[in-house]
Amino acid sequence: MKNRINRVISFFIVVLILSPSSLGYTQEVTNTKFDFRNTNWGMNKVEVKATEFNELIEDKDNMLIYADVIGGDMNVIVAYIFEDGKLVKGKYLFRSTDDENQYMQDYKRVKETLTLKYGSPKSDEEIWKDEAHKGEPKKWALAVT
Image 1 (cartoon, rainbow, N blue to C red):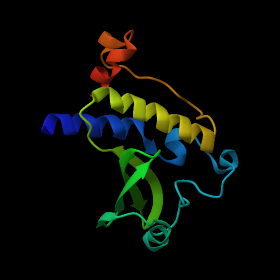
Image 2: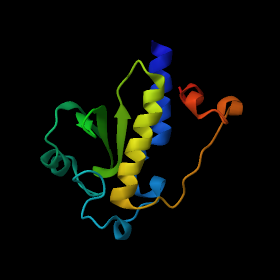
Image 3: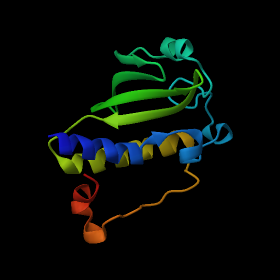
Image 4: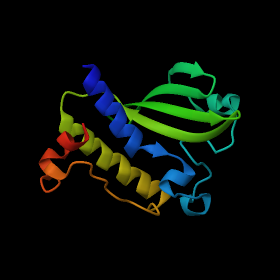
């Protein structure tokens, strides 16, 4: 169980770290007044809390963690990360599922949603440490979990 949790966390930390620099999105491209959910980079914790209506799971010195459901049926953890008291990064972490291929389907849905909202990323690449399943899309979940 611990190994599976570590695999899931590792996958989504790599795949879905959302910040202006990591995804290459800029305010000019977004056509929206927000950078991540209903927040803007540089907000303080009080300002971020005022925008979030979901269950607060944890309030740490440099992070706020919430539970949410996106896309109608995807249970996620939403993390807001702060440096020097200012919002610098946001993350979506997906909760565990018994179907390992569901992670890939969820990733594709979220990627499509983010691309529609923020525009195409400046870079989009796949990095394979082990290419054993690269030619077999139905087994990609094995490669990332």
